[in-house]
Length: 360
Image (cartoon, rainbow, N blue to C red; front, side, top):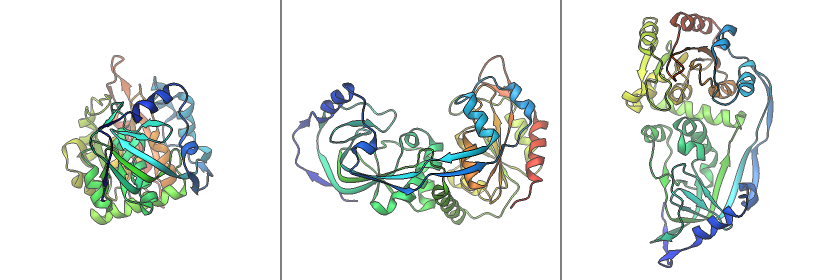
C-alpha cells in the first residue's frame, strides 16, 4: 500500500478539539457519522440447541463471566434473534495513535492507546482502506480470531486491509499467512474513504460461511486427517483461572488418543496442525479454545471446563452457528480463589456422551 505524504503544520490541535467535543456530549454512533451504511446480511432467527451438561454442575457455579440470566439462556437454547451484518462507508478518517479521528468525533480503537491531544510530525494520506479490526479484536486474541478474521473476509474487496494496532499477538502472523490475508499497520494516516463491517452479535449464516472459509484455508495450510481430538492447555496465562489438576486431566485424556497441546509453548503452525480436523476440542474456558474451534472437524464437539467463579459460555454462540455441539463440566473452587479443580471422571463421562453422538 502506498501512503502519500501530505503537507501539514508542525502540529495539529484537531485531536484536542475532538476530545473537548467528546467531553461535552455523548459521542455519536458510527451509523450517525457514516456517509452510508447498509446490511450485507439481514437479521436472522433460529432455535439454538441446548448445551450438554449434568444439571448438578450448576450447583457449583458461584460467579458468572457475564450474568446469570444470559448464561442460562445460552445453555438452555431456544428461539434466538441474530443481528444483521452491517457495512459502513466512512469519509475523512484519520488513524492516529490507536484512535480513529472523524470530522466530528474521536474514538479510541486500541484499548491501551494513549489519548493524543496534538498531532505532530509527518502525516500521510490514502484514498481508500478497509478497517481490519474491531475494538475487542484489538484487545483479545479470541475475538481477533473468530470476529476480526471473518470481518476481514467481508470487507477485503472494498480496499486494502488496515489496522491502527501498534503491536500484535504472537500467533496472528501465522494465521494471516495460512488464510492468505495481509494487514497494514497504520499511524498518522488519513483515509478519504474507510470501510468497516460491524459483526457484533451477528453470528448469522453470512458469518458462518466466512468462518467455514477460514477453516478450509487452515486445513489447506495445515492438512490433517480427522482425529479423536485435542486438549488445549491453558496453564496460568491470561486472566487467572488455574485448573490445579490440569496435567492430571491431560494425561488421562492422552491415554484415550486425545492430543495434548500447550498453546503458550508451541509454535502457531504446530497448534494449527494439531487442532485441524479434531473431533472434539477440550480445555478450560478461555481464548486458547478458539485455536481448536476455528479448525474443528465437521460435526465436532467442544467440551469446556468451566471455572466455578467465572462461568462463561461465550463459545456456545459460535458453536451453534457452526453446527458444533457444546458441552461443559463445572469445577470445584479452592479457598475462594480463582484456582479450581475438576473431577476427571466427570469430564470423561461427558466426553463419552459427546463422542457417541453421530457426526452428521
